[in-house]
Image 1 (tube, helix red, strand yellow):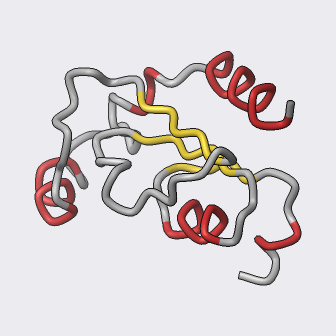
Image 2 (tube, one colour; image 1 turned 90 degrees about the vertical axis):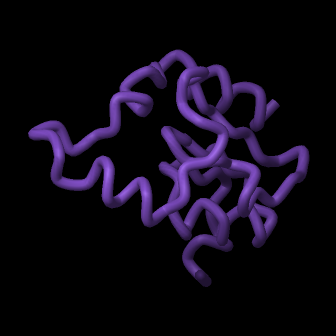
Length: 98
């Protein structure tokens, strides 16, 4: 946690460190796939959520996600994450640091 607090910007997928950095007031860009960003979102003007899959349900409980997707594919990345493009992240970086 101490290391997160010294960052100028933190970018990561929907994991604990995304929520910790946002709670610490570090500008944060969270990349979300099938999970719901509203569950643990720390809403500030310093946080940007990127979620590109309009077809993903608004909420997939963690146990259901693990049961349905974990180990079911040779691709370790959920298809909804593949829709997030580098350009999306660059735009978010420019916005959050401007």
